[in-house]
Image (cartoon, rainbow, N blue to C red; front, side, top):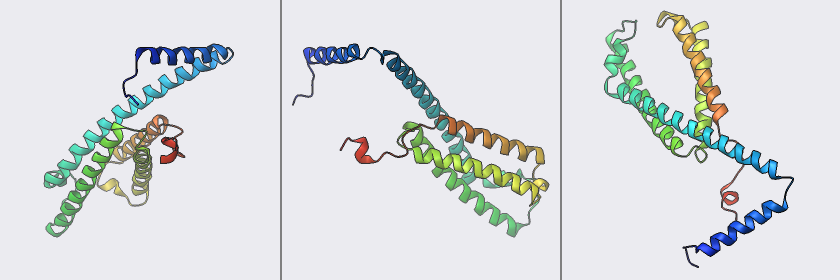
Amino acid sequence: MALVETWSETTDRTERGSQVTGLVSQSGLRQDRMVEGESNERTSVLGLRILLQFLASIEAIAGITLIFASKWVLSLTAVDLSPPDTYGMLLLLKAGGIIGTAFAYLLFRAGSDPVRYIAVIDALIFMLSTAAILNLYALLKLHIGLFSPPPFIITRALFQCFLAAVFVALRPRGVAGTTISQEHGK
């Protein structure tokens, strides 16, 4: 078995493909739609890749900032915390930075091949929608408006819902039920 295909083998395969297409005259319109659908799917996967890479870079910058400049981030809050509370908050911010950096890596990997890493995209959609619900719950029931302006919290929740909807719309279709043996044709 030679790995290099000769020109005549390529021509034969192309001619056989055109003969099969010529035999199916009624499905010619259907094939054009499939080709158009494939190009739309490639465009959406490209857009998803760009969005995931961009979100991964923002998440990495935020995670590294939380790890190495957590005192500065804590100084941005409107609440003045006493020293025992400050140490606990610094520890939580650093832990959040570690989790954010790890999630940035997952987003980066998902951005390289969104079809293969569909579970990361699903987790991102879940996290965005859950964070939006938690923001609104904290505003209404926990009165977090004392720490941050309520219009900012509402805007953040709406933006998270918008991002979740964008990821649902760009999510690759038809890959949830496949197994490894189906992908390799075994």
